[in-house]
Length: 337
Image (cartoon, rainbow, N blue to C red; front, side, top):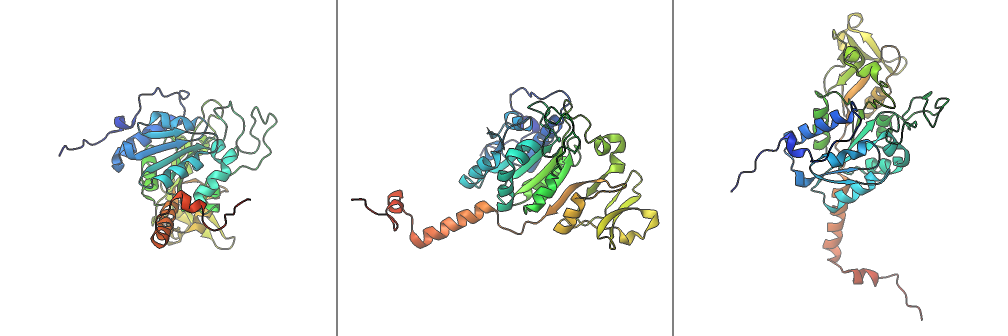
């Protein structure tokens, strides 16, 4: 037998010229993905990348795997069809805050609630980049853009809160430039059986540059980011001197200095606790960090495509294999004289 050589990041890079704006956060995400897939032991012929429309949706061109660049907002529908047709495939769905949460919000909602075994990456730059900077469903109130010249008056969507709200079983967040933690989140998403949702804070250097700089840039990251890990205390800060406790009186999370509390009061992250995940997504107030990592993971339910094929096999065992003619002529038909 011929030994199959181990794949490298270069094996997952296509021959297409990468055409994003210089400095775009998408480059870092692409490199992280190309570097992570060989470590997961996947094969190119068993991997599919599916996207909708937007800057992020050029992703399939740059992966040396199978892929579909589909239409605006409909990537979840195409990805669902692919996974149902061949459950053995590893299906990654690439979308953005506009593609996935505006015209595609309804499709994304149902893909998540059905728990289809898709790895969904949503690039969130809080703007429509491809169509020249209109505000998106995640844009902050007051955002000035060609479509909101006097400032947006919309209440923005929190993508991870949306995912939790429609009963996604895996929700995680990371930053585009975080090459240390992003590959591990991709690995966790791939290993999860069912729909996994990863929100990636991604900088649009042309139309919304620096929108996340209050927590994403290197100079402030240690003080402004909390990387949660299952069964570990929620401690952060450059000097590891801050933590998260439960304010029982107000039923909310609160940032404290470790020196001011008993360390036993610092919360331990439990990624199976959905209530805690919701509180982390909505953490705000003075000194509140951006919470990153796997916020929620519950693999309890059977993935949708497994349930579909199980139902088909059960019906076949009871009724046997039937032809289209049998189906068309069963009860409920009539003849017009």
